[in-house]
Length: 137
Image (cartoon, rainbow, N blue to C red):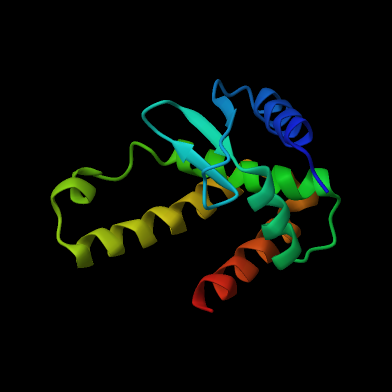
């Protein structure tokens, strides 16, 4: 089981290795394992959600590497932040919003993959595929 301080340490170390100035914060109200907030430039995490997600997404990686994979995906949101017109989320119809959310999600995986070390690429791709299956169900 990963604890708050473990996850926070892994996130901070990963961001430091990537030379990224992104804040990190625990939030026990999140309904997802991790979230990137563009307006505050913060990766938020819920350790219970991270542990639950780790139980659903089974990959042969250490707990630390599993969290790193989640961080790389959040970095993907950070990297693609200027490439999408977010006004659609404010003013668009429900279909447009859903389409944009799907596009943002897809891009986050793609941009996140660019910073994944070679040794974790296979596991990153595996988590991505398992996540898609989880969402469909």
